[in-house]
Structures are given as C-alpha cells and as structure tokens.
Image (cartoon, rainbow, N blue to C red; front, side, top):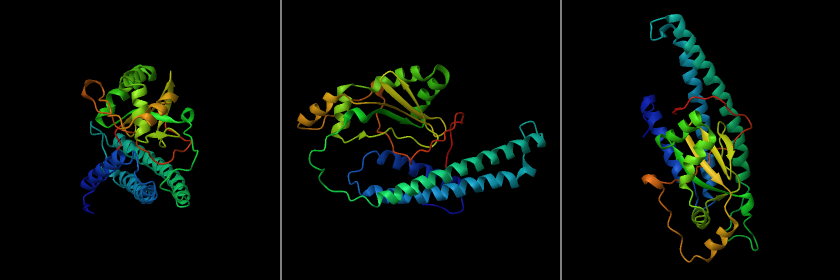
Length: 262
C-alpha cells in the first residue's frame, strides 16, 4: 500500500507493480481489458511526469547542500543542476508519450471486440513477429553488457540460444503471442542482425530478440491437438514473453545510462 509520505518505499512499490504488469500484460485473455489497462497507464504517466519534475526541482533548490566526493561545492552544484536539466528533458518526453498514449486510449474506446474472429481472416505471418526471448532487470545485464562491449551481432548470437525454430513459432502461435509490430518504447533501440531484430533499452534495463515466424509453423500449430509445452532455455534460464510498452515516438536517446527506477 502507498504511504503517501515515504518516497523511497512508494517508489519501490511502484517499480514492483510495474514489473508485475510487465509480466502479466504479454497476452490478454479478454481483449476488452486492454482499454482499462490503457486508462490506468495514462494516469500513471501523468503521475510519473509530476514525480520527475518534483525530483528535478529538489535538485535545484538543494544546491546549497551539494558537494562532490572531494568536498568541492562548486562541482556538486554543477552536478545537481545537470541532473535537474536531464530530468526536465525526460519530463518533456513523458509529455509526448502521454499525448500518444491518450490518442491510443481514445482509439481503443472505439473498438468492439467479438468473441469469434471474422471469417476467412488469415494471419499474415510474413508481416508478424515472434518474440524469441525477453529479458529485463538482472537477467538482461549480461546481454546489455555484450551490446556495449562487443556489439549487436555478438548479443544476437548470445540470445539466439533461446530460439528453437519451428518449436518456438508453434508455441507462440498456439498461445496467440504473435505481434504485428515489435514493441518499442520511447527510448528503445532496435538493430537487425541476420534473421533477427534486437530491441533493447539500457535506460530501463531490458532486451528482446525477435524474428518473423516460419510460414509452416502456423500449419503445424493448427493441426496440433494440444498446446506445445514451452521449452526451457539453456543453462536453466527461463523464457518470458515481451511486454507492450506505450506507443513509441520517433525520438530516441542514443546514450542513456542504465538503472532508472520510478
């Protein structure tokens, strides 16, 4: 429960709640539930914008107390004001994201979801994506470090060990975990390597590997009487499904530090 007076405890609880939503929101059993989730996310973005601006303002007003590790006041002031400036920029990005999310929320309210699909609707697999693996937090650290030190190709080779080919496709199709587009947030980066597309965000600490499913995987899934069990990734690592963050804008951050918390 929120304390309303302890920012550290409330920030930790908000982070854990968003982590839970990231895991739960990969697939919606009832599509109509997405509308309610979008409404709650809109409210969350407004609150997040306010929090970021408050932290920025506190860095500005507390500059008389700012020093660096060597005890130099002038350097501490410069650091504090730099933090405030970066946070003000982040708040402006959140404003843009809120506008896009509000547009999506409004459009979602006009969708009438039916229990049965329209007749003669074929899945265009050549335009869709399977998420091979999605990692976040500590699980993503190794892959993000490889991206930084060895490059995208090395990271893709590392993450490709989660790809079981047609078996991965069949599981995703059976579970309805096929997407028309790669999910990407405001600060997410994407890069292609061979048949794969890598999406990652060092700022939020997550990485995902995507590819187009093979066309014969749909036929295999359609003729299978039972859903295929999801294979375990190598070395005991677990596989998770990708989250769907709010709609990306064209603006991205090329050099952003890892480890932001709410």
